[in-house]
Picture 1: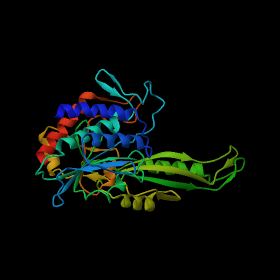
Picture 2: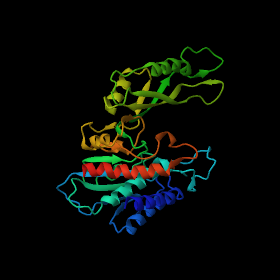
Picture 3: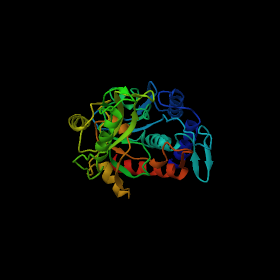
Picture 4: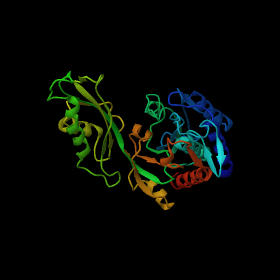
Length: 353
């Protein structure tokens, strides 16, 4: 059965690659996933571009395990030498936009869900959500589904991890800041030039270290990623705009990070865009983690953001593919990685379910 499901999963992934599904434009890939469930005679529901289903013998008295991955993609970059919307197999690699992030994970989880769909007497209910808008952290993605699907007790989020266990994930807060000064003509003296004032501010952001270090996720990482000021060569601007990207470990809440920067940063103003993308984790003693370790999988902390940020329950990031290939030109996943992914997902859940 696993061999047949693997063949079908790869075929579905090829269809997904060849169907454009930028964030918030996933209606056609949602149809493909609907067709998959219809073909396998599995009842499903759709909310906007999110498609979900529950196992046949769902029991409200049991805890529920969520299987989730996304079918939206980023837009292809200019470095592609292959058609990003053509599924090309060469030397054991399946090329195409979204193949690695996160199509391989999604089809592997769908195949795994099918494998367990009709089984009786499971310890957990299974719910699968093929979600939209992950890449944009949009309002109509997994976060919009949590009030619709049954209450989730634990989750496996499919992202490329080389099938190792990402037991924690950094959160994200983006800040908009301003450094102010005095506007003037460039020909006249000005001891309050906002651009020059920014030099010390940038140095502060480069040097500042948050005190709490996580054994799994390491330090909080803060990076100034955008700077904007001035409109003409002969006018000193009154302010400089900065954007700061902060990757938050599990020792801080996003609110705590915002409070620290509001109090300590030398910016004239600083404001968080959103505080909802918190760090995520699962205890090392959780059955899912112990089962993965028994299968020889390594544990680590992930620096990248995923739909885990939408979940308040313990969650494990796990999937075929390699995160370093995500968003790169000529994105690909090895077919063998999908085969291994389905096999390990099944073996993992057999130990828990």
